[in-house]
Length: 211
Length: 249
Image (tube, rainbow over all chains, first blue to last red; front, side):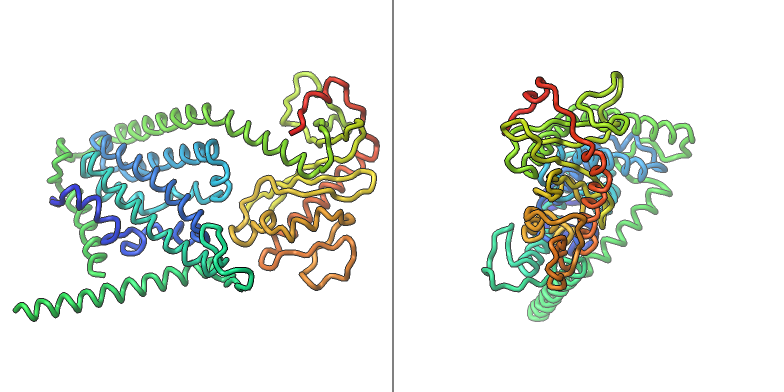
């Protein structure tokens, strides 16, 4: 069906098909918990764990899952891993767990994870599913940390909790509010669009010259 | 952005292909009508396994989580009651304070306060914890109360899911938290910053987190309204062996 190399499986999710910036999936956590870099990192880590485990398990068990109930089965698997992540975080990293609060439970409804199961893990072997999940997870982390960085620097004048501008900086409170999330995402997508367009124009120029 | 539309097309195609026939290498059996029983059985088995896994991990993590919470609470009591040597947990049994519980009763069913004593064994403060609705979810507050002067000796948020960056300032913004250490008169009133009249019971609320700030003030006022009549009846002396049960940090 699709002929891609394992390397492509891995690299694809990082930039070319970045889940947040290109596929526009998983926007809920991308908007909600990116008001600081630390939160963005913790969220990415939890999502990464859930996605890798679900991908491997689902691609291992895909034979036993009837087509009609596949979505329910995927959700069940994802929800189980989210609950495990929630309990393990609470036991071994209580500080981060307190920071993320309700957003950990919301990983269940992250359509990025469900999307990977439906389009990839249910059709490929566990190893390639893991590569795909890890690549997508890295892409998700990049997007979240990028948003978290912008919002934390502008909204509180610090990066990872370290103050950057000294006491005279007047923080843009709006950047840590939900509205700031939408603004940041909008500007990042705008920048992505401009880069993409320039690249396209350049490619066309090259083809013209060659022909 | 052509990448995105390509991707979308591909998903649609995949679904159609799978519904009619499957050229999936992995799907060995020809897709045919699957019996309802098999669908139900698959989900039931998966659900049972998921449940089992969660229970197993919970059995493992619950003691760690409980231990951490108890430790947090112990530290919080010492934090909100400065100068306390040790403390005892008093339960509210039939409207009376008691160190021991009626036999056979579960500890979690009783309301409680933590009575701190100084080096001479005199009561120097009472820590009360209480939860009420904040902006997102229940906020759990613990605060120290001096039964003699009726003032606060400290306040700490035990649990909150308030908006990160705004509502969580109720425990991150030290300008707000420190107001409770100064020993304000109770009941307290929340005022906008700069709008106060200099009364000793005024608390400057956090800009952008009015609901969270009000909730904290409300929790303390309600808790005092509930416990003050009980505490005013006097705190029974702790049995000698119970005093040494708690260690100082």
